[in-house]
Length: 99
Image (cartoon, rainbow, N blue to C red; front, side):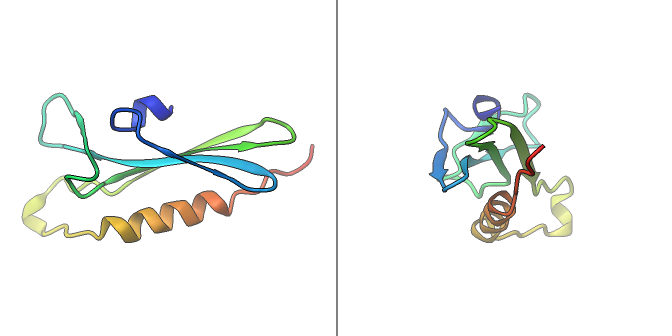
């Protein structure tokens, strides 16, 4: 999942007391026929992803959050930093219940 969503394997890892969150962002060019991912440091990221793993049970959940604009004439001006902040907040809020 991380390799499929990241640009050149770029992602970060956040370790908390009960989970590990591997997260990152990339830019997916919807105008490119191949749909290539591009460097989020050169382009405003529009794909945010995370793999959240419970350290006790090793259960996991994947989060994919996209803000892709398919009609640029509608002025889809987004703040990628705020979108990433929101996606990470969502990932941090995940709690695994004991079976």
